[in-house]
Length: 280
Ligand SMILES: C[S@@+](CC[C@H](N)C(=O)[O-])C[C@H]1O[C@@H](n2cnc3c(N)ncnc32)[C@H](O)[C@@H]1O
Image (cartoon, rainbow, N blue to C red; front, side):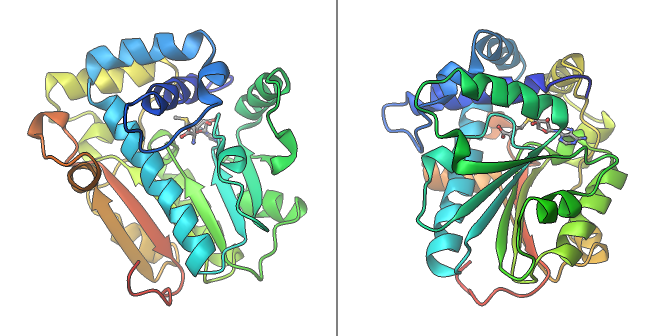
């Protein structure tokens, strides 16, 4: 990535659109203003490659919002970390009592976000603690501890829309540090694309265009996996659950459509210990 993330503005624009659905899965009332003029322009371009992206975004956000609700209500989580936060507004949107929010991002994106937030009347900028980190070269745990995160309390880590853009070395280093450096009851949740998308092989025309589009925004897809459990095991995780975007669509949109091309896309949630929550 060179400079502040453009894909972060793009997905912010998609959140604004999803918030206008007749029956929205979530409402982000800040997204439209944060996305500015560039965000919708990138999203319109991306629509031409992958028309199902708006639905995909709605499902990803809804899945993670629900995870915040479950882990704070039922697992006693009082610290939520957003890794690669972009223009995430959960700290403002989901203000659970007693929950501390930490946003970690590449310094260029974080600076751009804070500039936009400062110009947004009424946004509770202090709802999150901000820490910068380049996952390709720096340790997020060091940054988080220096910002006041407790390693003795369970944490929910949301790593949304970031893993595909990292090298495998950075994914492994970051995942390993999270497993070793947080309270073992912590959970980490992220989205993962398939290996062919990352490698750029055996793709249909639509997938090729999608890959090309984000590459042209200076954020090439670098990491994907069809079976993430071995990597997570090597990084120190003991419990892994994943769900495909087809399954999320069936649950929340009420149907299955092969042409959405959701089947190789997954939400993965993992922990260094087995959660005391058989329903999770
Ligand atoms: C597609 S955006 C997702 C933003 C946000 N999580 C969301 O879903 O709206 C990708 C994010 O990954 C971050 N990112 C990419 N490479 C990074 C790196 N090497 N270190 C830290 N953050 C990185 C970008 O700064 C950006 O915020």
